[in-house]
Image (cartoon, rainbow, N blue to C red):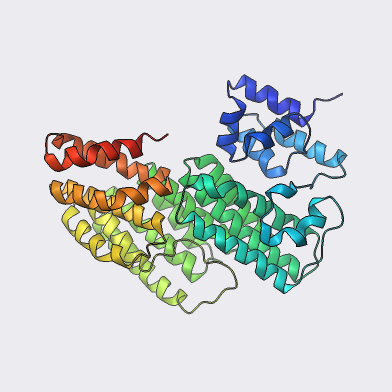
Length: 400
């Protein structure tokens, strides 16, 4: 008899020298849930199988085993009732118990979207670890409900699941797991296409371009952003965000003229998108002026750190205090620009204002700039303002 999925997972995990807790952290499921999977107390879901196969370098074996398990199991789509969000529990209880899936109406879809919006709001203020498990569970649930409902509810649920999967990819990137981030982003594109919306397929390139930027790979960032703009079905918002990302790639490469041309395209597209309406959460940044923030970010890469710091200082007060993640990202970038400009006291002062947001949001991408700032400030370790801020800077950097 062929090995069960749980036995195979345990075998590949042991071969990788990875504890169950380490695997749980990598794939953003609880240790208890992984234990139930390995002991065949729960069936594997397709996304978990794909992520584990990638993380453990199983070469497709775990994906195939999960597919076989679903074919044999009558309750392959059973979900854990205890992990369901309270707002949707009464409606979803029937589906989670393995019975017939409930037929939903527009009010139920609106309620599910409201639950997602609450998770998004929480994700702006705290560590990805607080949100990811609930977000993954809710995404799988909405996808499962879509399969059991007729049109037009089916398409509405698929599109909502796509937005949720895209945000799960973003938070996975924030958690420092780029492989999982890409997997979720591509899954979001699949869900969106199934629901009749090809927008996220283009936006997936924008997300990948962002990953390339954090790897300091401007060539890949520019190429991916250009691919997003070439897709004929990309809407004006996706086109604008892609051009914005392309501009950041040109700045990282030191090409001011190409940067300005891309920013002009981004401005035109985002102005056009302002009139767009959608029933679903918008893709990408929700910052008040994303182009000004991107320009402030990029000026430091273009050798204009003083201009960068001034522009970011002007923009940061407009970011809501509830959006700690964006405030942390551009606050650290402002402090780095001050340091690069030789304004050490101002760098330390602004970092002291930002460090609490950085600690709360626990962002792997923000820590990339924070490490660069720490290296820059280390040249002035004897300076009194640096001595004051450095212990807290080190504490935040070495939390992981």
